[in-house]
Amino acid sequence: MTPRKIHKYSAGLGGSTDEGLRGRLKYNNRRLNTAGHRLNIELRSSLIEQRFLSAYEIPRAHPVDETLSLQVGIRREDLNVFNTAEAQVGLTETKRRPWGWLETRFISVKEQSFDVASDNRTTTLILPGLRWTKRRSDDPLYPLDRYAISFEIRGSANALVSDVDFARTLLSIRAVYGLPQGIRLLTRTELGASWVENFRALPPSERFFAGGDTSIRGYALDDLGPVDNSRRVVGGKYLAVASVEVEKFVSESWGLALFCDAGNAFGGSGQNQEVKLGIGLGVRWRSPIGPVGIDLAHPLDDDSLARIHLRIGGEF
Image (cartoon, rainbow, N blue to C red; front, side, top):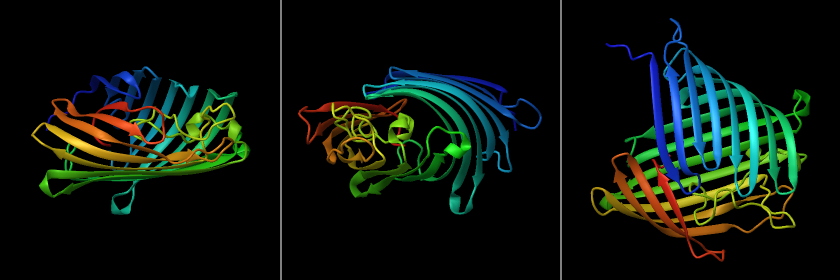
């Protein structure tokens, strides 16, 4: 066996309708010491988000997927709906659980300045939480049998020196099924709920929004949810989104897709909107760099005729 190199440098370039052009630079030190401690530093940038994250990782009993990690990062996000600037320090531990589940325990300290609708605030949160994930796939790029399940609960309290009392849960289920005649069925479900006393003090990262390439196609990123009296989206306390897509490759490299997305965010301090529907057609290309999808989506209850969505990368 030959040891891998201690230092690894990588870069990536991609794009999507939501983010526009995006780039990534990453550095990994795989062996900081004889105990196998690792250092990861990553810089991401797109038209809507800039992020820097560093993580010091200590391997645990099963070092492939069990680690204790200390993270420090900053992030800036600027959308039509809201903009935020955030700094955080966090501690994360992952552990294997029975039946293939991976449990992640985390606590982070965040200070976030945000501007959403008429709210312009700075909020400090101490966020403990738990996340359980389970994945299976028969192929990393073009699976016929694949699923990913994630359930997370997190929150903060004034007793923990946070500015907001709240709890938040999010369930995400994605699956790919192979059908006869080379057809694939892709499904996606996201359900979220939160409990909060002062919703207007809750930063956008803890509110629910819908719309975008991986949510409800036909609408812009995070452009759906309850609105204020000026019809500005403020986000919600609850989320319900579902998607069904049928895909068929007509050649080795090219395929077609039909899809329907539905859902919205609800609750909170704004006025609820009806369930939104987006339907459309897509083209799929098995490119040398991975899957590429171009969708033409029509929002059924919106004045706009259609919206183009571009994705480079796998389904999840």
